[in-house]
Amino acid sequence: MMKMPGVLSRKNRVACALALAMLPSGAWAYLDGEIIPDGPTHDYFVSLNNQTITANVAGGTTTSAFAVEGNYKARVFCSKTVINQPVYFEGRTSLSPTSDGYLDLNEYMDAKITIYIEGTGNGQMTIPFAPVSNQNNTNRCSANDLNGEGTVMNNLFASGSNGTVTFRLKKPIINGITISGTEVAEIYGRLAAGAGVMGSTPLARVIIEQALITVPDKCVIGDGSPITVDLGQIPNSADAIEKNAQPVSVDIPVKCEGGSFATANMQIKIGVLQGSPASFNSNYLSTTGPVDRRDLGISLTERTASQTIVPNSFYDIPGFDNNEGIWHLSAKPVGKPGTMIPEGDFQASATIVTLFP
Image 1 (tube, rainbow, N blue to C red):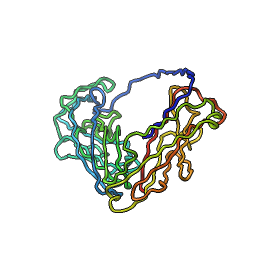
Image 2: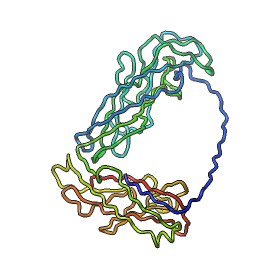
Image 3: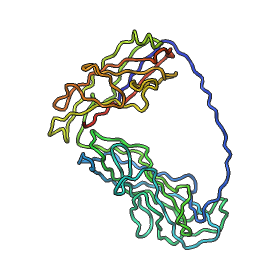
Image 4: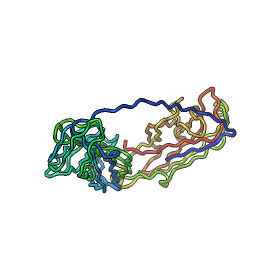
C-alpha cells in the first residue's frame, strides 16, 4: 500500500445537496407453497483464513470445509391446507459458471461451492443446483391469503450453514490473495406443491466474509508495511504546480523467495494499482481530500529509465537480480491544465503488486 499525503494552504468549502425521492410501494401475491424467511434473509458469514495452494500453477486447488452456527425460521404461503410434505430447496448464485462445477470468482481464481441440504440422501450440493427435496415429510401449511403474512412453520432450517469451498487458480500468483464480502450462494425454498418454480426471496445467503489464500512463492515489498510519501505543501493552481512542485524520491526494495524463486532467478513485473485513476488523465493517480480533488493527480516516474509509471500497468524492475532489487520511483503532484486547485489536505492511496511475467 502506498499513501501520499499533502496539504495546500487555504481551505474552500463546497456544499452538496442530496435529493431523495419516494417511490410508491405495492403488495404482491406469493407463489402457492412459497417459503420466505420469518424476518430478514439469514446470512451465513464464512471465514476461511490461511488456505495454502501448494501447486502454484493454473489448476492448483485447495479445499476447506466450513460450518457456521445458527438456524432460521420461515413462513409459508398456501391457498389450501397442506400436510406431510417435504420442502424443496434450490441453490442459486450471481457468479458465472466456468467449468467442472467451478464459478468465476476473480481474475486469479475460480471457486466451487457445495452446500449441505438437510434431508436424507442429499448431502453436499454443488452451487447452483435445481430444486431438491429435503425428504422430510413433516411440514404443513394452513390455508392462508397469498397476499397476507403466511404461516410460521414449526420446523427450524439450517440449510446453507455448512459446506465446502474449493479455490482453483487460473494462473500463478505471488504472496497470496485476500477475498472479503463475496456472496457465493442463495438458498430458496418451497413446499412440494409446485416446487418447480421458486419465489424471489432467499431463505439464506452464504457469504465469504474473509479468506486468505497463500502460495509458497512470496515477494516482500519494503518491510511489508504501508509506504508513506510526504509531498509537502504545493501551490493551488495547475500552472504553479507544474513550475514549482518538486518530485519526491521513493525507493522500494523488493525481495522474492520460496516456491519457484528457490530454484530459479526469475524476472517479475511490478505495478501500482488504483481502482479509479485521475479523471482528467488516467496516467496519474487520483487524489482525495475534504474538498473536491478531481483536478489534482500524482505522477509516478521510474527514475533509472525516466519511465512514466501508469496506474494498473506492469513493468520490469531495472537491475532486478537474484530475485531482489530496488524500484526507484519519484512522485510529483500534477494539476489539470488551466485549473485552480481548492486548497486543503489531499492524499493518494494505491497498492503495489508483483506478478510473474
